[in-house]
Image (cartoon, rainbow, N blue to C red; front, side):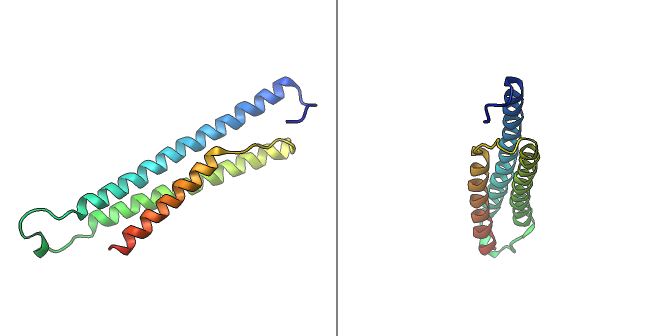
Length: 126
């Protein structure tokens, strides 16, 4: 952080940056929940049960719903990262020398990759 900024401005920047990071982490939790619920629903309805389960016609309703949850989680994650990037770009326009590493964006990328992997696995098993 540049030394020519006063103490109040530095603290305001820190509060704003941390608020953006907390917001991103909240969206990551939401997206992770959607992806996890989608995968769990898909797995639950994929378990054969009862006598003659192999003779019954397979319904795609629950599987399609679960794939929708996974896709919704991935879209929420993408939009959250884009929102954070826009906010950080606006902050950087006012204070160009201020920048920080975001652990939230790294976690978002890892959860996104995990969600894409789950989506590909489930789509190939339809």
